[in-house]
Length: 237
Ligand code: C5P
Image (cartoon, rainbow, N blue to C red; front, side, top):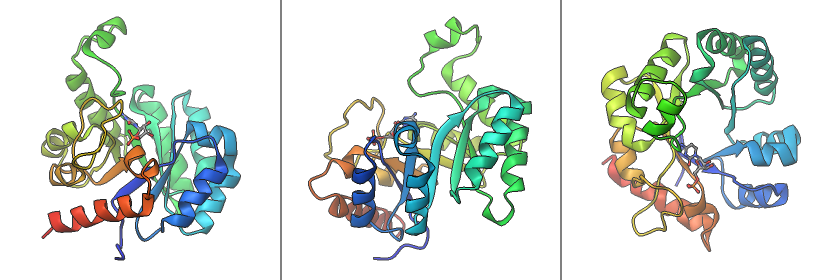
């Protein structure tokens, strides 16, 4: 089964580059994209990202930059030079920072990666909002941050699949919605609290699904990925 634009982004949550490369060998760029986050990037660096892009993988570099505009601009530009497909920053860094990040990806020209925002970390509660002096519920803050990100020219956002339908309704079809917290029917939720199946998430408006352990910790990761892709094909019929 070949897919022109795979919807599954496999989270390579490991510090072991050999393990990440072994997964990349077993899977294929026609079946999934890959997410490299802070753990793997800090341990294995740009060299690992380059090895994965050379194999043809679209890489979502999940480093969630949040700093002064000039620093974020330079970091996003440096990341863009690695030939990645997508990168993210925190919307709460403010509009000047978001505009600087947008300028940086535009400077990458034909290699321009998608630039998306983290709205509110899904680990945060309404109590955390008030502790931070934010006089909004998490849901209101998600909407406000999503709006700020899109007004600043970002391509979309990372959000809970449970928020996808609401964000689609508010912001229309063009924003990219990248959603973690995905669990195929009958799999272990692990530490995820609010889960959705791949099919439900796509039907609710997710553009791409971030999935880690249900694939990487499966006895046969390639089979787990194939089953998820199959469920998505069935959902589009
Ligand atoms: O193994 P699992 O499918 O739970 O992995 C989900 C991935 O998505 C992890 O890399 C996790 O850090 C990331 N993520 C998340 N929830 C968020 C943002 C990112 O689970 N709100």
